[in-house]
Figure 1 (spheres, rainbow, N blue to C red):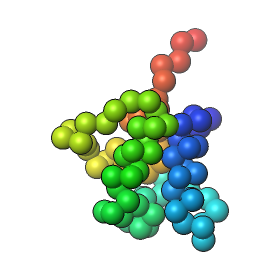
Figure 2: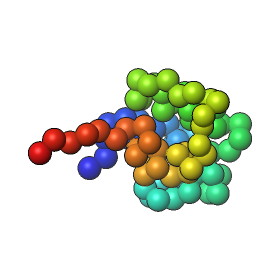
Figure 3: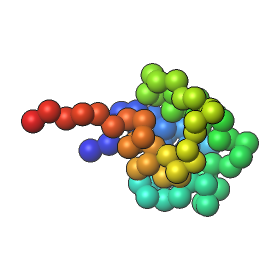
Figure 4: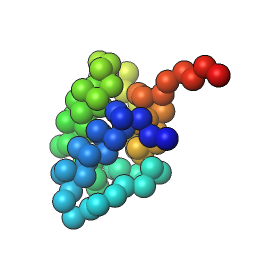
Length: 82
């Protein structure tokens, strides 16, 4: 089940691409040009807003931003206690 935060990020990306109505969790956002060099910084800010956590630009790992699954794991993962 996707977190509300990743749903916000997905909606932000889809809002920039009205020709799209969905993004697969493993679709590469950069290779598919859903996120380019000009919108990358905005994506980081969208993630910060949705997660409530500040992202340090000096330690960014591009792997954490390539798919919605990677973004969710890096910025929205929660510890589940059984």
